[in-house]
Image (tube, rainbow, N blue to C red; front, side):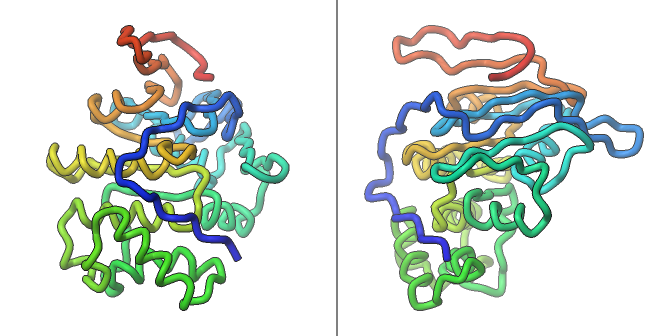
Length: 264
């Protein structure tokens, strides 16, 4: 059984600075779909507590890279090493499907553009489901799910079904579901892509507060430069290769720096 992650006490806690400890380390990732090369020798290091945006044109390999880092897809060659907060490092690419599923249920959280929630369930049931599939008793899972929904501004909406919520509210449910198990790394694929700019900004702030704001890691695919600018680093892909890395501006207001090649 995986212990539930305590809900945040405030809605806007300051983000902890990224550590120097690597949580994910990818080397020489290659993935082809027929004659199309989605990943072409990608090397990427991601630190604990860091937020990383992955950008690039359609077909550049953004989602493939995200899915490979998360163990959803296996590369044709190369490796991804995950270093948990407790325990020995694990090479995700060498694990079987059941072991990778275990990581995705506990150590990793996911927020997608469409939410991928279960419409027949209520908001609280959708969040609690992440705990239930890990063996948490329903009597314990529902209160934890309720705490997370209330912490993310959805108090009083716990019993609403997904079709009764707005787009922004739906994404808050998805964020709560991703965090309730105590995910060390959250993967987000265009989490604000279906929202208007104002709602998207609110959802992004909540997503970052509940991940990097608590010392955990966020890896996000986005097409929105304003969303990427909120992250510590931006990785730019084209034709399955990393072209450049942009580092966020320092507190002094210095401009973002850009370096080509391998992102570390």
